[in-house]
Amino acid sequence: MINNRLVLAYIGNGKSANRYHLPFVLQRSDKFIVKKIFDIRIRHDLWKTIDGVEYVEDVNKILNDPKIDMVVICTAHHLHYDYAKMVLNAGKHCLVEKPFMENSAQAKEIFALADEKGLYCSAYQNRRYDSDFLTVQKVIESGKLGDLLELEMHFDYYRPEVPEKINHFDPAMSYLYGHGCHTLDQVISYFGKPDTINYDVRQLLGEGRFNDYFDLDMYYGTLKVSVKSSYFRVKERPSFVVYGKKGMFIKQSKDRQEEHLKLFYMPTNKDFGVDTPEHYGTLIYYDQDGFYHEEKVVSVTGDYARVYDGIYDCIVKHQPQIITHEQTLLQMEILETGISKLK
Image (cartoon, rainbow, N blue to C red; front, side, top):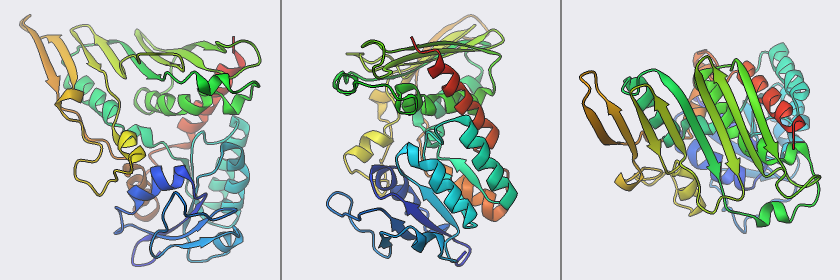
């Protein structure tokens, strides 16, 4: 560390690193220093050079740098396993984009290696800090819904050109792996391990094609949590719908951080990712006296940088790891099982 700040390096200089990591880390200059970024071929035609960062085309310049404390892997998923092993064997903490690995066997091996060497290792589960998910938690914890009965989570697109241009099937490149890793982590982080799961995973374009639809029902006693996604929704379903014995909450729009990042509207802006009243969810419930209420709920502001805050607190302040190995392994096992039941 330098002046109590963790020194970071990144493997990968594409969208993941420059859109979903670096804009947030650079807002935490009291905790982190970004020293190096590696890619096979460094380009700056889309992602601008960051002042003070050294760009390298030899990964060993990161692995052999004694000043680097942690390496963040932002590559295609099929490279995660090999790079994670390199990083941990070099004695450095490791953060890996999602899906964490291609299968649970790889994940178990990587976590065992991290434990053996006494190093931090986790998946980058930034969607835990989505505004819509945080707002749902606020509503649930208010108690106004009463006992929970059902929660639906939707991650929909109308992008038929994506599955239509893919004429082969790769489990680790499936829609379930690519997007289920967001929503499943939200469920696991808040509700824990389900009692049972019902899987409906499909190839709407036919056998041997891209997995373009999934619907997982996860049961926690009387509560059912449904995680649903499709590439063929002309009008997307609400991001969240929650039902309780006393009421319901509906949040139509998703967290806006990604929307802003795609427009290169960065966290340096005060209104970055912030919902306006048109984005607020609606809470409908009956109070203890039987009176009906319908009201808008001001959204909790999301912040992907909270993943890094948790990492800093774990490594530097010796606080418990927030994104645990057990949670990631459970997610990987659910993904594997789900894709094995493909219809």
